[in-house]
Every structure is written in C-alpha cells, then in structure tokens.
Length: 274
Image 1 (cartoon, one colour):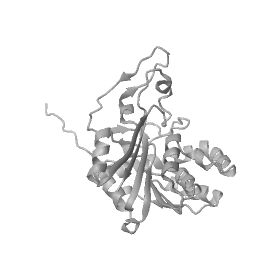
Image 2: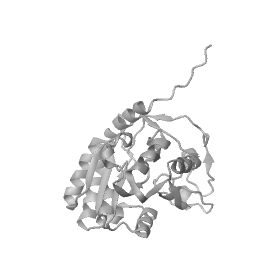
Image 3: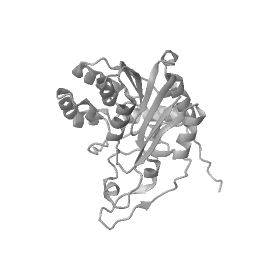
Image 4: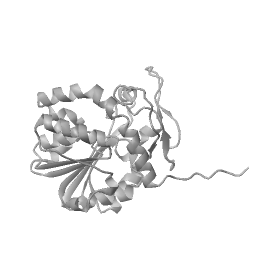
C-alpha cells in the first residue's frame, strides 16, 4: 500500500479557512458578550478588557501619547482599552469582517476614535509601516498564524526605531495538556507531542465563552513552541526586554491546573524592542 504523504496547507489556504471559521462564530460571541461589553463601556471600565499581566506591562511602558496597533484584535475591545489609557492613536486589525463591524459599534458606543482594519496580518498595506510605537498581541493570536518568521518581520516593519512589541499569550505547553478529571488528586496529563510540526485541523465550536454548538467550518491551528516564537522575533531584529512565564489561565481553559499546588506555566508575557 502506498504511504499517504501529508501535504501542509499553503498560507493562503489556512488564512481563508480560518477566516470562514471565525466569521461563523461572530454572531454567537456577540449574543453572549454584547451586554457585558456595553456595561463596562457605560461604567468606563475599559481596562477590564485587558488581562492583568497585559495591563501591568502596558502601564509599565506607559502608552500615553503613543501610537499602537493590535493585530488579531477580534472586536477591538482591548485596542479600545489601550486608547482609553491615553494612546494618541489606536488601530486594530482582524481577519474577520463580523468582528470588525462589531468593533466599530463598540467604538461608537464608547465615543472613542478607534481605527479598525479588516485584513490578514500578511496583507497589511505598506502605508502602515514605520507608523507605530507599539505592536500589541493578546491571547489566542499566534496559533492561527502559519508563518511566524514573516509575521515578526511584518511587526518589525510596523514599528518606528525604538518601538516595542508586547505579547501576552497562552503558553505553548497548553497545546499538549489534557484536562478532563477535575478531582483534587488529578495530576496533569500530557497528550500528543510538544514538538509536532503538523497543523491541527478542527471543526468544533470556537465559542470559547459559552460553548455554543453550531455548524462550524474547518479551521487550521498551528502549534508554535516557545523557542520558535522567540527565535522568530530575534531573527526579525527584535531584542528581548521582558520575558515572564505565569500560572495565570488567561485562556479560561485550564482553571483546574491554575488551582493546583504544583503550578504549570499557562501563559507568558514577552516584551520586545527594536
């Protein structure tokens, strides 16, 4: 029998698949989150949209008066928070038209001049290059990107000399953690290989808020090891300013592990400069 050879999708194929997958979940996210978002805007609790580690780091580097861009921004609520913290310009970029439309509604509701662009990070207009003091990346972004080297090169081009990039992401080790038994005695179980190079093809719900089931299109997800992430950043011309691993479960997927006495790194914060 002839052995079947695995064919890796092209960047264009993965981008197109992931766009369809995320467009399908927009209505479900909006249904479950719109009221909560509106309440935070009404009370001007914009920084509640940011995870604790992100907020502390953005306060440390001081975003006041700075031009920032967030890639893979979803509906732009975090970008809006940074604008409310005093940034002079805030631009959010996302592949999903539905999230960009929702982001515009949120910005109108908040009466803040948030700029939103619907685009793949790989197809950004060159007019954005050398225009920003900070590139911000938050939870759930890097796994949807096939080409890390190209991604970090694009991020470097967006920044002026002396600019920074802040990444607050789920730790790659989470990709191989299996969390089913919630008992106190339960120890972490590893499933799969941390060193896999093959993408994951899924067609399950991407509604990470309430888990709504719907007819989900196939998506492509890429596991990037921590060494690959850091190396790609260095190759692009960045230097490491801050790197911290954290037991904080910013993905809201491993609450049981976060409460265990034997802590695992469930997220990390990486600040780069150029």
